[in-house]
Amino acid sequence: MKLVSQYYMEKVISLGADKLKLKDMPYDPRHEGIRIEPELFFWRLYHGNKYIECRSETEAEYCKLMMEARQDKVAIPKDEEYLKEILPELKRLKAKHDEAIEDKLYTIFSKKIREKILSLFWQRIFDDKYFDWEAFMALEDVGE
Image (cartoon, rainbow, N blue to C red; front, side, top):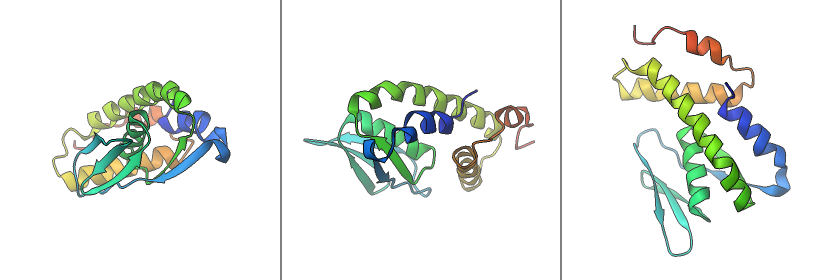
């Protein structure tokens, strides 16, 4: 299975700096729920009382996905049509990752421990291009 990070490297980072913009994500593990709200000429992506402004709903959805993956800085394609093109596959891959990690964490009830494990999981996926997906899927349930 392809990792979200592999797809991100192939489809986003490979575009080069001139076709990307960087944004800092306002992720804060103390708050639950990330929400997108329309404004008059842009969209806001909120987490807790912090937010970032996005030029479109598509960009806000892209940033939300990356924020859920615990990324603190995100490269965003400047081309809106290209962003619309790659977003569905990013969502599909992330949903597969979410399903896999939730299957492993279903017996952990502590929010603090779950958050720590999720942060480490996403850090490992994005930091290590050699993440062994098959070995991860073969792990016994974490809570057992």
